Amino acid sequence: MVPPWVFIGAVAVLFPIFAFLTFQNINRERESSSRLLLEKGAALIRAFEAGTRTGMMGMHWSGFQLQRLLTETAQQPDIAYLLVTDPAGTILAHNDPSRIGQKHGEQIDFKRLFESDTVQWRVVGTGDGRKVFEVIRRFIPSSSGMAGHRGGMMFNRLFDAFFEAVPGKAPSGLAIFVGLDMSAVEEAVAADTRHTILMGVILLLIGFAGIILLFLVQNYHAAKTSLSRIKAFSDHVVEKMPIGLLTTDAAGKIGSLNPVGAALLGLERTASLGRTAHDILPRELSAFIFAPQSGHPMEKELECTLGTGEQIPLEVIASRLTTDQGDFLGHLVLIRDLREVQALKKEIARSHRMASVGRLAAGVAHEIRNPLSSIKGFATYFKERYREKPEDQQISGIMIQEVDRLNKVVGQLLDFARPVKIQKKRIKLKPFIEDSVKLIRRQAQEKGVAVEVRAAPEIEGHLDPDRISQVLLNLYLNALEAMEPGGRLFIAASKKNGSGDIEIKIHDTGVGINPEDLAHIFDPYFTTKAAGTGLGLAIVYNILEAHGSAIHVDSRPGKGTTITLVFFE
Ligand code: ADP
Ligand code: MG
Image (cartoon, rainbow, N blue to C red; front, side, top):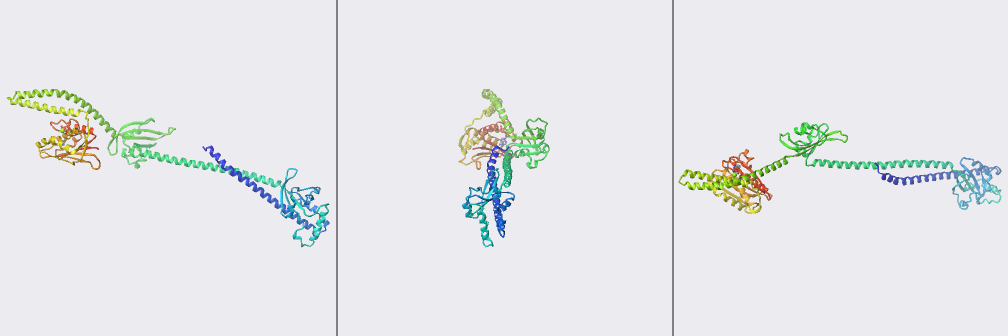
């Protein structure tokens, strides 16, 4: 879990620190033990000097034995040896009398030693491998403090005399050497060193553990932040996804519901969370979700009844949520609104049906049209022939009328069935509408209906003029047919506020349309008129559809009808 570079890094950082500290500690240890030994040596020398003085003072010289004092002082523990030499390094007195006369301290600079009263020290090895800490100083049996003392002079004299007894030695100065056994100190230092190293290792381990802990904590934090980032992201995804999402827990309570899902099901989102799905979901949906099933996702189109009683088609995909071990966690449900899709499907089916009906109608219409012209020809012939028989002539007249009507119906049928091809042009609407009104001017006059056109001269439309005049004509005729004498037909073209879209309104003061008929007026062959074909508005619808335009009908029975055409820019 912890990468190897962390170990290497920790060692690289901690080890030099540890080594430096340990080294320094041991050094300090050595220094302080040296100082201790030095002080001990110096104290011994001072004590020995004092002993020498008292030994000589007020006593007979014969009573004073330097050699004996030396031997006795050297009896103290830790003293390896105690000796006095002359400046040439010849031993004058030694706790081991057999060494007297031998040389000692060849490396010592006696001249420097005699220049001051300071103590010098060094570590020397004895023959048997032990180490001795040697403290050296000028030997001053008579100090300045003794100068005024009674018998001081005598003391010096006696002392000198003592040394003179040693043949050929000038007592111009003496050096005293104290050898202190270092083994106890060495042992203590070794023990201390061991202790220091042990402490160091422990500290190293603690530091090491600390670094790893630090790394783990940092790792944990990084993992935690990235986890919360992932969670925020997935929450956002669920929140914003364009289809409804719903989950339930193992007990069938709603665990989550995104806004789209709540809107689709007509539920209050926060209030739904935690409630039993059975109680609040549409019956059909919960029956589907909780149906006994395998683990596979199931997909179905459902007609769901919402709480408001509204029925909406939904596409539902449901699957069981299980852990990797197979423990059941709840259900996951995706919901998609099918209203638009179904409306489109219906529309497509309708246009398919219309297309096939249209082809059939076109074929039939052609077959009818051909014999119609012969029938009309014969009828005209008989009308001429029975000029003197008014009854027969009248029958012939009706025949001609009916043939004309049939011809019109067939013509309209062909219009309706023919696929609409449009060629849009940019035209000024005012003159265009005025021209279209001319076609019905005579009929309007006969009916006693006033026609009014209102359009700003600059308004332009982007449309197929031939097809749209066909549309307008159909709408005018319907309006005229709906009105009694004294009615008003009002046509207006205007820009829809804000956009470049154009509106043409055709308003009449006719009988209006029954609300229950309103849904059917665009259906082919729907008519409420005895002589109607029911194809007029169906043709209008086809042409507008080909333009990508919209048509709105607003009608109040007994008051009138307004039909609005919208041409989008
Ligand atoms: P037709 O005119 O041959 O009846 P249409 O398709 O033109 O067929 O019209 C269908 C029906 O819609 C009409 O029969 C009529 O009932 C109704 N309708 C259409 N326009 C109007 C209108 N301006 N006023 C009242 N009813 C109308
Ligand atoms: Mg009509």
